[in-house]
Length: 393
Image (cartoon, rainbow, N blue to C red):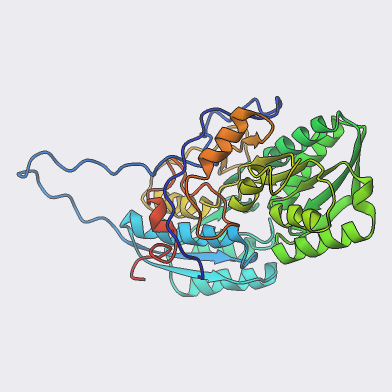
C-alpha cells in the first residue's frame, strides 16, 4: 500500500437529501452503507475481580480473495477493512489475502488455493455470480465457511453481504432523470462487464429508465469502465473529443466519477448533471464552486467497509451465531442500504461536508470507513500506514 494519513470516523448520516424515490429501507437491515460515526464499543470489563475468568476465545484463519479492481480506491480500502476487522476481532490468528486482476477462472483457482491452505473461512469479492460455485462447494465440503461481499453468488450455502446495488443505481438514475425533467440523453458508464454488482446496477438503472421513457441512453448497453480510473479518464476524453459530449444532458457513472469531472474541466466544457459515489475526490468537487463552477451532482453511498463486515459475518458463522438475512433479498443475503445526497441545497452541502471530516489517505477512497453493527475496528486501524494490518502484520 502507498497510502498515508489517518482518518477518523465519519459522522453518521441523519438527514438524507435524496430523491423522493429513496423511500424504503429493509426491515432486516440498517442503513449501514452510509458513513458511520464510530465503531461499536467493546463489552464492559467484569465489575468484580473475583469473577471467574472466561474461556479463551476460539481463533481462526481467514482467507480473502479479491479478483479485480487492484489500484481502485474502493477495492484497496475493502482489503484494509478486512485486515482491520481480523485484527480487531481478537479471533483471527492469520488472514491470507489474495488480490489480483483476474477473470472468474483465475479467482476459482485462488479460492482453491485458500482451501488448500486449510483456512476456516473464505471471504471474497466475486468476479461472477455462478462460476465460483464449484470451488465454494469444495470449501464447504472441507468445513470452510464462505462469504461473498460487494456482490452476490448463486451458491445456496454461501452468505452474501453487500450494498443494495439495484437501489444504488435506481437512486442515482432517478435523481439524474429528475434533473433533466424526464427528457434528454444520458451517457451511461458502467463497471466491470459480467460482474454481479454491475449486473444489479444495470437492473436498477433500467428500472428508473422505464419510469422515464423520455430519456435516451448512449451507448444503449452502457460502456464498461472496469471500475478503473485510467480507463474512465480515457473513455471520457474520447467521448468529449468525438463531439458526443455536446449532445448529452447528463452522465451516470458507476463510481468512477471524479475522473470524468476532471476530463470535462480539462476540455473547458460546461458540466452536465452527474451521478457518482461517496469517494472523497468526488465529494470535494461537489463542494468546490470555484474550481468546478456550475457542477451539479449526487453521491450515492457504497461503503468499502464490506470487506471488514464480511470478516465479521464469517466469524459469526464460525461461532454459530444466527445471522438474519434481509427480508425480500436473495437467500442468505444481508443488504446494506444506500442513500443519495446532492449538492443542490444547503442541507445537502452540509451533509457532504460532514462526510469529509478529514482528508483520506487516498482521495479515491469511499468515505464510509466503518459500518455500525458490522465492524469493530476504529477508522485509524483501517488506514495505512499505521493501520491496514492484519494479525501478526
